Image (cartoon, rainbow, N blue to C red):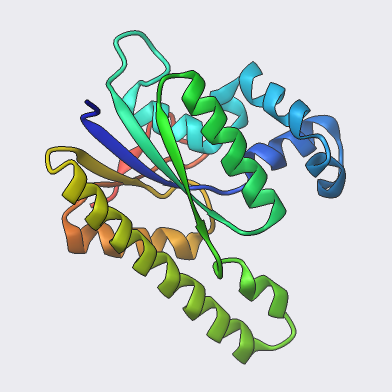
Length: 190
């Protein structure tokens, strides 16, 4: 029985790191999913911020790792879908049962760059959707496994998602942690 459940926001660091390493545009990198998967396997902590922060917090890649499960919160963009799928697959190879939780509206503001009012409305909708879905998800997790320790990992995704996770974590008294690319360890937010 897992004793820890980590909810991770998923960004596209894996894809971005692959693009940089191969000097490819994102459109081409998206067509190379199998190569991106191999890139992740080659050096998971260096190539993927979400894996790096989860391992920093839990040590799940090392010997004597705790039993844990994870939820991956991602956007409906092609890049978000690919990264979530590959991270889920990687976690499962390490014995971590992972599930994906897609957010339908979190990426919409980027489509409305020219219209500030529309971007604001879409951002509010997306961030409200994030909070509502996570609250519902956490409620279900607690009902199913009352003793499981739930933690929120806000390393991936964009900054506004981090703010929502922080507020939700404080409201529900759940630890929220983050790993900046220049840190060696994940830090718990106060």
